[in-house]
Length: 258
Image (cartoon, rainbow, N blue to C red):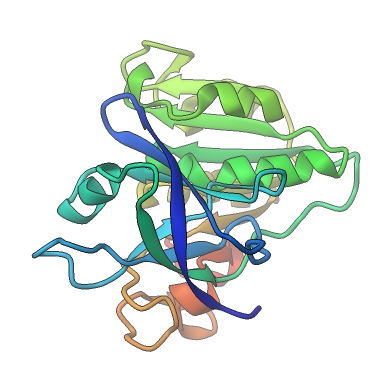
């Protein structure tokens, strides 16, 4: 897909809980095509410690109002400066980057979308695209506490939600792979994004049951084009750049010890 370097206009900045910020961006022209699982590289201006662009997952693309949504966890200087943006500001982005999740074709398919923390971000767009195909996705979302469950209401509008929190403040207590639905139900395909230990556990569950599973890796990505080699992942095909050859991989390609 063709890549663009665009100055996008900030439409709104919504603070979600204590950690997350939803930034909606637009452009005077129609936004380029973007697929679920792809990401953008954002230039952070005015930060003395942020020299490289920051990779941010495509959270959602609303074609009705020509907006791109980015869900950001404000945990470092660069992302905190993004959280301080205001409507009318400009954000320079390289997009779209990386590959995408595979889209289920069979309307009888039962997909499970598993996310943790800010890793839930790409699953909203993926779930909405799956729903447009007449398939109802199930979201299995995990967080430390209820205040860390970003965009829960939006996920409920797209599909069925099942939740785990580590402190039992909402849903079932524990990690996502502890949820009772995994032992009581069957799924045809699993898509996952979040902390690596979570995805490894999800991959272990999928492999044990022979379920096709794709994960979106969150290796440090500086250039987004495969030039700097800082995001290399060892795979059955050798070392691959997550930003260019991923970030989405079938677990059969990965050398995780699962």
